[in-house]
Each structure stands twice: as structure tokens, then as C-alpha cells.
Amino acid sequence: MTNTSNFIVNQLTRDLKNLPAAILDRRYPKHGTMDKSALSRATDPSSAPTPGYLYNDIGKSLTTPQACVETLNFLLSRLNKNNPHVKRKCLKVLAKIAAHSASRGMMKRAVVQNPAAIGAIKEGMAWRGSADAVTGDQYNVEVREAAKECLEVVYSDQGDHHQGQHGGGG
Image 1 (cartoon, one colour):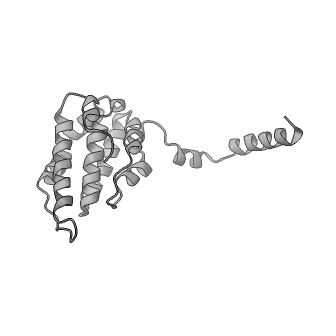
Image 2: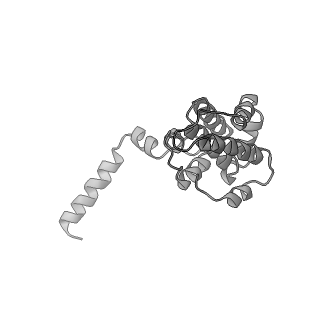
Image 3: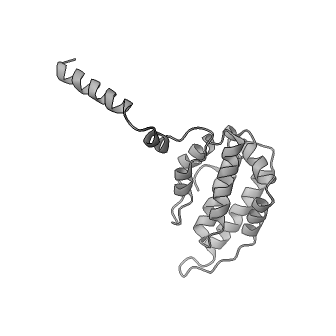
């Protein structure tokens, strides 16, 4: 290497060491903590499907019971929205992460032990929103189907094998 490239490498190394920990923590969340950024992107109010990699990223962060409870509470707060896209995506995320192998069943337990969570999912099965001018009742039907799938996953004992049967996207 030349002196210039050595200087640049040394400069970058020193700069990286001086980055505040808060910036690194925000960009790379610790395992065992809720990844609020990924959850927000996964449950955005658009009609676009949730990218499949987000399910995996969120699932990998669920390594402690506390992370599962925090994630569940976040998703429950998002389920209270009246947007059918947000409801469908929350239910889909909940189903995918409950079946994710990294949570080792902790997410399923967190859902089953929370009566408000089960109630919110069951409300999704009976949810009737206003019909869209272009798509009619399609979005409402998708919410009900996602709620049904979510309950099936939460009460199944198949683990992450159930996730593989339905594909990844959402």
C-alpha cells in the first residue's frame, strides 16, 4: 500500500472508533431488543407488501421474553389503527415472527398469555372496514384472512415449519 492509502485506512479506523455508540445502536439494534425501525417499516400504511427480509430481521431480534413482549405491545398498538393495510401487515408480521425459530416459542407464549392480543386478533377476524372505491372489500377480506392465519400459527405447534409452507412475502 502507498502512504496515501495507509493514511486513509488509519483515518477511517480512527473515525469509526470515535462514532458515538448511540448511532451504532440505532443502526444495528442489539439482539434481545425490539427493532422499532424494522417494525415501523413492516407495518407502514401503504398497500405495498412487506419485504420478506424484514420478517427475518424482526424474528432474529426476538431472543428474550422482554423483546417478545415489547414487540407484541408495539404490534397491538398498531392494530388499533383503522387502516386495513396496517392491520393486515401487523397480523402478518405477528404470524411470521411467532413461527420464527429464533424466538424459540417465546413469541407464541407472549401472545397466548396476553388476553388483549388474542382479543385483537379475533377482532381482526370479524373486522369490517369501509369498502375501497377501486378494490371494494378486498382489503377487508385480506385483514380477516391474515387474522385467521395468525391465530392458526399462534396455536400451532409446528414452529417455523409453518412459515415455510406459506412463502415469505406479505
